Image (cartoon, rainbow, N blue to C red; front, side):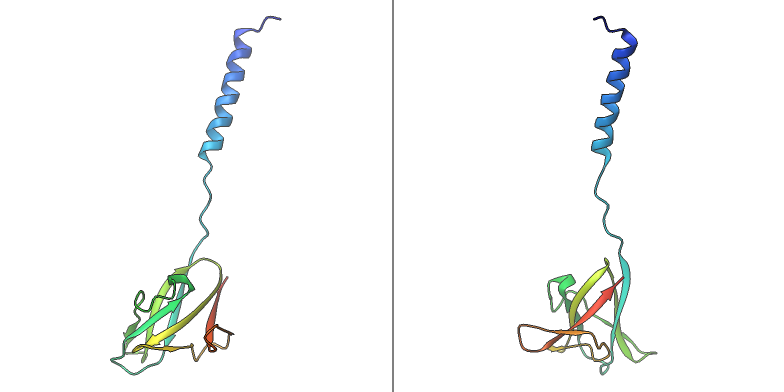
Length: 117
């Protein structure tokens, strides 16, 4: 059986196109949303946010004092999901007093839970 030059070119183009499509696909990163965490504490305190999103680091995310509002705040970007967290105020771990969503942790206390949709 004899194959024409036109058939060979079409077959080559199809294979090339399929390969290019396979290599061009990359996994899409989940969209993130800004989430603001706030807590009321006396001015002059060292206030940090620790949680699953930063490996419970006690110094990774410092909250800023918002004088006009009278509280500390920070905003971070999170993908949709649930995240456990606590505030660390002058070295003392505190659950979020304004968030009723919490879970018991392995220390016998509670972690606050933020849900990002």
